[in-house]
Image (cartoon, rainbow, N blue to C red; front, side, top):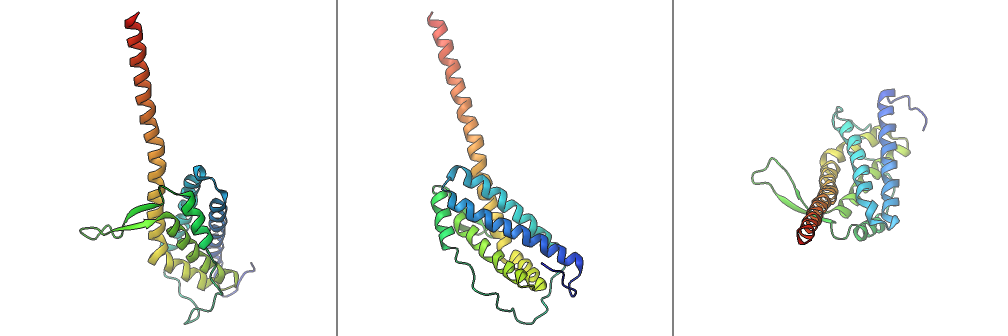
Length: 198
């Protein structure tokens, strides 16, 4: 993408960095969804969502971006992500559904049922929309859209997905360790009983 004289170089560098991360996320989500490999889906999604959240955090700490046009220019049709949603739902069968705390500062907190497949697909759609503006050369519009949608929607969705995926990984690792420890204890008891019987 060529440099735009009306956009400061540091702002354009930020936009390029965010665009690169968005492209990487979209490509990875497509590949994960079509892989048919549920054993790798959770750790890979955990990695990709974590990296996208880092990009979002970089947007969140910036001053508010203001688009140059009063009304959002047409970015073209949004990508059809239904197939990705369906493939992810199949891959994540058994741990697609999770419960999210909508706002941790509300007392009592609102618990919201969510699905990893729905949320990842919604996030992909929102960041892809900003990427369309970026590719069309509307850097300020892309940054505004990414920042606004991060603060208003996909940042919270990605945080919820991250917690859900991290929980799956934790249960997988820690529960397995507990099971192994219990199995080792049973073997040790059986060996001790066998020695006593001799």
